[in-house]
Image (tube, rainbow, N blue to C red; front, side, top):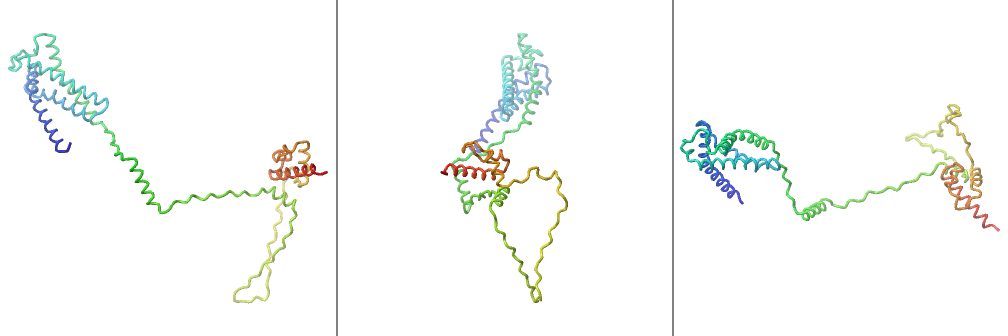
Length: 299
């Protein structure tokens, strides 16, 4: 429905409610006169009953959940009470001419007591329920409206197209550096002791001639004198076991692996028995297995 149609619908509703209020106002005014209200109170009495009905209707449109159920109950209770009072006003002609006795709405006493209690309690109920409804409406926080959901395929395609246009070229994968394993210092010492190395002759430094002058003699660069030992190494800092040669390690490995088959001659076992590094243990294992293979193959 467009905006013009909504405005016309609300205007028609307000007109109908105003006319219905005018009809009910006459009956409720006479009921208020019958229960002892003065002229001003009788004129305001219809606003107390039917006005709370309008307030409960607005609260029903705003509130949600249990608060909305409470507003609907108030609206239904006051609608029923207004209907009963209008019905009594139509059954008792004396109410129209104000000739009825004060406080007398029905001939039967129990019905009269109930009607008087209903008519007198409606103003007090309007104060209580009206205040409660207004407090609920003021403290009500409407739920946030979720954004409109677009078609999932269209949104995915749009994001894909934007991502392709924003990237001029494909991103290269990060280069993975291969880890470089440093040689074991014990294995290097073992290889140095096992393989004799030729001494490298020292290279004398080349003298540099200064620019613009020819020196008479060239002075060779001299290296600084080596620093002497600052003191004696304490006994606690020295290694308790003397450094063993490769031959001694091999002898200890032969003794430890004597009587074991070739399958149990492992580097881990040699390392535990001889107490050496993993690199030395692998070299000793290969040496022992080579010796056993040579012994088996010999005539």
